[in-house]
Amino acid sequence: MSVWIAIGVTAVGCYLVKLLGLSVPAGILESPLVRRLAALVPVALLAALTAQQGFGDGTAPAFDARAAGLGAAAVALLLRAPFLVVVAAAVAVTAGVRALA
Amino acid sequence: MRRVPQQTDSPQRGEREGRADRDVIRDALGVGVAVGLSGFAFGVTAAGAGISLAQTCALSLLVFTGASQFALVTALAAGGGPLTAAAGALFLGTRNAFYGLRLSTLLRLPRGVRAAAAHWVIDETSVVALAQPDRRSARLGFAVTGASLYALWNLSTLLGALGAEALGDMDTWGLDAAGPAVFLALLAPMLRTAVERATAAVAVVLGLGLLPVLPAGVPVLVSALAAPLVLAAHARTAAGKRARRDAERGAGRGEESAR
Image (cartoon, rainbow over all chains, first blue to last red; front, side, top):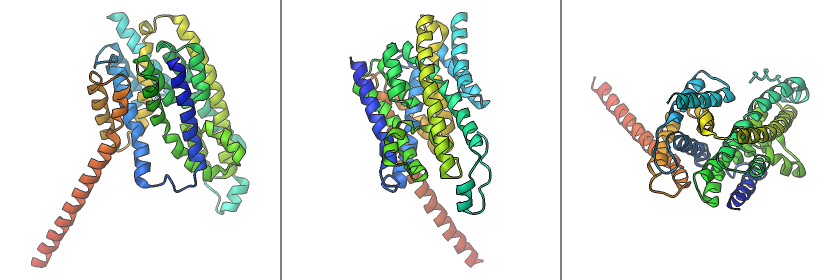
């Protein structure tokens, strides 16, 4: 049940945020500080999520095969590989390291 | 993406001629298909996080903004409360409001269409629409990217979730690495300047360091503080640098007049 609550809140909230941008008169959200923060907050969240998912076990930092997988994804990104190739590289290397261990 | 051809000399002419519809549709489909297929990674990740098939598909149908969807299922999988998990997803979704702002003046949608179009205001549709030289192409690019991405994203979400259930133990297949790889792929193009890199570094330290001490899902929310912290620090050092430069310039002038 709590999963459905989370889905409902996220769906309604994300829709309203999208609609807000299309509906408010231009200029209201245009302050340079608000714009810079809005651009930087996703950077912070994505960085924290990457670190927690790649180098954490949910309650503490933890290093395992996923770290190697993320390394492969980073290399793929540097080589400008397409999105799905980046994800596939991470999955394949993680599985490979686990199979060898 | 293909480069937008040079705009014609007068805006009126550009408005009437615009780009060939075929070119706009081709670019839009390219983005829609490539990104739409990555719903597969979301379906797999959601299934691995213990989210049911119906819930996974509901997320792609109703939320339809990738980073928020990934953030929500990973927060729930980590044991975060529903509202904490939703808060992180909403934070990530706020950037869509800023796309909407820029799109509203470009597309000038009638009120009735606006409510429906809002659901498709995401990174990819905005990037395609904003790259067009005139309103007609922008509307076409937005609609084709939105339609193709929405259809494929939901289809591939379903296939990914079904496939993951068939695979059984996700960790053996390394599928628990899909989530962080997606976040990294979304993050990488955003790391353009020192301010963004510093924000990411501070957020990583906060996100990992607070894992043992705060309830699940909360460290991610706290890591958002990296943004105002780094902006404030940047403003101070920029002000300091300016003051130093002014002082040096003043000293330089002093030397010159002495000579």
